[in-house]
Image (cartoon, rainbow, N blue to C red; front, side):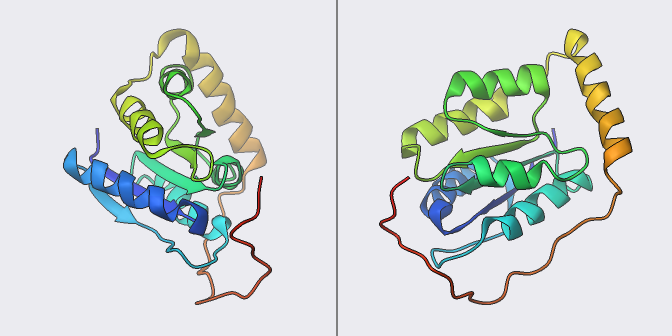
Length: 172
């Protein structure tokens, strides 16, 4: 497996991103940090950076973090060849690798504790795709993408600092 992993987040995933990057480096991975920091930011910019790298073959896998993991998953799945999964437990992390050959892991910075997130990353990285029975479904996804996706890639830079309504104490 390629030992390069692209990692990105919005502000709600920043602290978790730092912990994950440390784990990845300790495990011998080369990490490409696509941002963000702890200032208010919009997740589609960072999801696009990671997903476009995976789509283009610059990395076999990527990791994205937003508040719930759902937004970055939706954004990442807009890229051809990306199979992003929002995961909340290690069992689902194992299954999404074994059955779906997921290549982008999406986590919720406001939904998971540090140790749960790190265990999910470990399981996801160490689990291989089962092939066989599941190949038919992945082939159908490729056919679907060939029909529905144009191949154009959206990946603009986020403005240096975007003013928007943001409440760090907002509850889910």
